[in-house]
Length: 571
Ligand SMILES: *[C@@H]1O[C@H](CO)[C@@H](O)[C@H](O)[C@H]1NC(C)=O
Ligand SMILES: *[C@@H]1O[C@H](CO)[C@@H](O)[C@H](O)[C@H]1NC(C)=O
Ligand SMILES: *[C@@H]1O[C@H](CO)[C@@H](O)[C@H](O)[C@H]1NC(C)=O
Ligand SMILES: *[C@@H]1O[C@H](CO)[C@@H](O)[C@H](O)[C@H]1NC(C)=O
Ligand SMILES: *[C@@H]1O[C@H](CO)[C@@H](O)[C@H](O)[C@H]1NC(C)=O
Ligand SMILES: *[C@@H]1O[C@H](CO)[C@@H](O)[C@H](O)[C@H]1NC(C)=O
Ligand SMILES: *[C@@H]1O[C@H](CO)[C@@H](O)[C@H](O)[C@H]1NC(C)=O
Ligand SMILES: *[C@@H]1O[C@H](CO)[C@@H](O)[C@H](O)[C@H]1NC(C)=O
Ligand SMILES: *[C@@H]1O[C@H](CO)[C@@H](O)[C@H](O)[C@H]1NC(C)=O
Ligand SMILES: *[C@@H]1O[C@H](CO)[C@@H](O)[C@H](O)[C@H]1NC(C)=O
Ligand SMILES: *[C@@H]1O[C@H](CO)[C@@H](O)[C@H](O)[C@H]1NC(C)=O
Image (cartoon, rainbow, N blue to C red; front, side, top):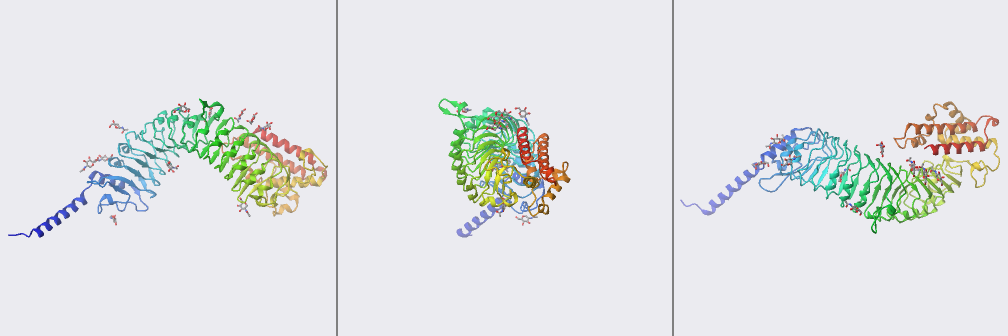
């Protein structure tokens, strides 16, 4: 029988293609399929039905979030199930996915341990488990020689800082866990490390000198741990560093400065960090002065040294920082004039210099900071008048000039019209001001002199208004409040709450300032309460119903200065 070759050929091709497609649909590694099914089994709640397609009516390579290699048989190379709110735990069976390169389970609610079997995945390149509720210790990834990115942040991981990490690691993110122990000096062997975060843990000890070898480091965040020792000068070797954060630790000693860091001809100081944008070391115990080289870093955008014990002057070089938008130096011991050159940093949006010992005038050049949103100069020794140019700053949202020695007329433009956006209280020599802070305070005609310097003899009614304003400042009621219709009712209000219940009536914002720092020791808080009590007492002495009972304005002023000096001295 003669078979037509064309038809026979066609039949063969057809058969071959059918059998090929059958092979394809059943091909794929059985171990991979079973591993994935076990992973699904360990998920108890799947609110968005992310795993509904994980069933045998489709090939596992088409299951949601699963990707495979194109080779035959196809093998699982990637699992990506983010933002699914999956509950349950991570099955150890994933350790059988020999070809897995990428595993991301970010933003779920997975609990229990990270299976140690993941440490068998030699081809793994990125492991992203951020933002789950994973517990227990971090397993060893020393054998995952391909691992480049390890994100375990925002979990409940405990135990020691991992000691044996793969040498090729580029990103390590351990932030927001409960890790203890010290940063191992072996971390200095991970020469490829570019981003390292272990913020918000309980790591103690010092920053090992071996980290100086990490020349390629771009981001280093160790904020909120219990690290101590001198300022970690190893960061000065990291010339690629872009951001460095070590707030809320216990570093002490001096900040490095050019003078103590000359090596050959090259100043080994902050000036070496040519790409740095962010340097935050607030809330430590550092002293010494603000190194002027910092301001020659062309990229510097954020500088935070608040809550330390820095002294000396703010260098005039600050004016060289042409990209600086955030400058936080509050609660230090800086003194001298605020440099005029600060007005050259026209990108500044936030300037916080509160609670230092700055003296002299507020630079008029601040008027050039046209994008300034926040300016804090409270609790310094600033004198002179408030530059009217501050009223021209259209974007200024918060201004705190309280507790200085400012005198003269309060400007009337711009922010000075908004009493909730600014504070000028605690300046004895200011006149005018926004409605809520309306100082009637010039009751004493001292002609440009400070209150305590006397001047014309005041009348008993002057002292009464003085007392009322004093009470208003500390109680901070709306001017429309009934008790403002007659000064006696605010005095009565204070009197009935005095001395035991004053915290129920004192301006909550003032009280909050005492609590600014949660660690504020009880003794310091008590000093604050004592201060409130003393001031209110003076207010009461000034507002006695009969003029003869009232103290003199000089006496009131002298007492207030005494209270302030004692308060500043003790804190
Ligand atoms: C499936 O994968 C496992 C682990 O890689 C391997 O041991 C096994 O030989 C593979 N089976 C087939 C049929 O390829
Ligand atoms: C199996 O997966 C398909 C989607 O690929 C889905 O339509 C079907 O409902 C699933 N079957 C079961 C029993 O979940
Ligand atoms: C897969 O992984 C589990 C847990 O690690 C293990 O008990 C099992 O023997 C593995 N299966 C295969 C086929 O390798
Ligand atoms: C790493 O691999 C070696 C050699 O296979 C093995 O002896 C060791 O136990 C592995 N380590 C871990 C932590 O899995
Ligand atoms: C963890 O690190 C990665 C890479 O640096 C980053 O993208 C991620 O935002 C980090 N997570 C947190 C919470 O900082
Ligand atoms: C760190 O920098 C200093 C000064 O440039 C240099 O002497 C030292 O060898 C560097 N350390 C490392 C580990 O590179
Ligand atoms: C901070 O470090 C000093 C030693 O420099 C130590 O005495 C003190 O206990 C540490 N404080 C905290 C809160 O760890
Ligand atoms: C701040 O530093 C000075 C020395 O510059 C020192 O006398 C003082 O005790 C330090 N204050 C605090 C609170 O550490
Ligand atoms: C502030 O610094 C000066 C030196 O500039 C020092 O004499 C003084 O003790 C410091 N005050 C505090 C409270 O640390
Ligand atoms: C503030 O500086 C003055 C000198 O300008 C100094 O006498 C005073 O002790 C300093 N105050 C504090 C708290 O350091
Ligand atoms: C006053 O300032 C407050 C606080 O900055 C702000 O919320 C409010 O909108 C401002 N009011 C006006 C009229 O500008």
